Length: 76
Image (cartoon, rainbow, N blue to C red):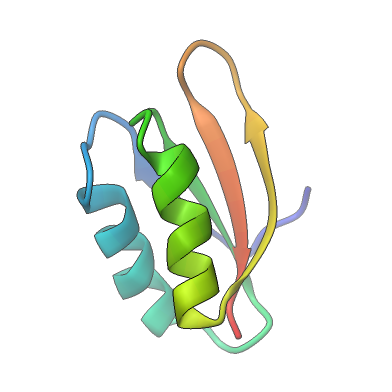
């Protein structure tokens, strides 16, 4: 999947991946896509919840090997 910006949150635990994603999304233009790379098991729940609450669109979430997941978030 194509994305405009990449955020490496590997090794960070809840709530840091979501907090860093929120900060990075603030600097993006509406419609741009952020790829968030995270390996925190809680991110599977936290990222979709963050998107729902903030109005951003979670385009997809995919396993990327080992515990790493990639989340593709379109800014509202």
